[in-house]
Length: 407
Image 1 (cartoon, rainbow, N blue to C red):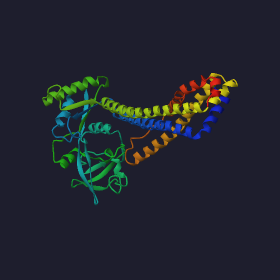
Image 2 (image 1 turned 60 degrees about the horizontal axis):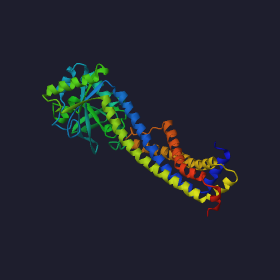
Image 3 (image 1 turned 60 degrees about the vertical axis):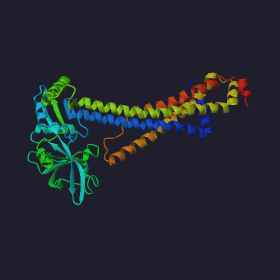
């Protein structure tokens, strides 16, 4: 049992060796801080992915063409209007809508920028609503595009920021040119959370055809909504078979692929798990090295205090009391390192989140659940305790006569 005297004695010994104790704490808290930072950002990303998953819904199929470049940018592999019709004829598919994007030159005043222009299927409200579900954000200002809005646009969030895309913020009613064609702003979307998507410009399909001078749009992706989520795999295979037949392709040689929204989100989560896990592994290795350093510190401390241990035993201290004192010292070192590591981790994570948000990467937000604080503190304390076990055990087994004669 840990007595008040044992605790007081252990803390006094640590205070008498301030520099060594401080260096040991530093070696542990660096690893704890690293773990805290990456786990907090990892949890933040998982929260973001879960939010997207709930916004998109599990009743969606996403179709993309196989290609070397970005979806919709490689004319060798295309998704066209006929593919949308094939999907809509597939049993189990309620609706299908597509979006295309292309790079364009945008001018405002004396500034010229190159951004992505995205087509929206405004001819049918259901198609537009289906496409909007993929964006997972709502309008911040104004309205969405409608039929006949071929000279109007809806902008991404960064156009509202000073020096976001242009030097001066853009607002409703402002005009600028895209590939030498004039457009007027009628709406602005909320922040998605990354600079690329938040710099997109959205136009109607007719305006997109005129802009690209191509009546046969090469779509970046097609989104299909199924009527029964429980049969989504069956419907996916049926849609894949129908598209393969329509394109005259053999099984296994498809120039397209179909994923459920859940599969797409799951693939992101798997990659994220691997990346975060690898980084945490590196951090854990640094903590293991810190534990070895702590053990070395405790061994050194025991050698320096061999006579002291002999005196304690000579006046009646039991092996368990000696063991408790040295375990307390290593545990206190780990506990203090955990507290400092958490404080540093929270500070750096928060500052990192603010910096990333200012740079336009708003989706990269750290998450600070209580379990993360408790987990890091317990882990740091255990590291200190475990690393001090062998030295503490050796100290408790010393014979009083040998300890008193030690020089």
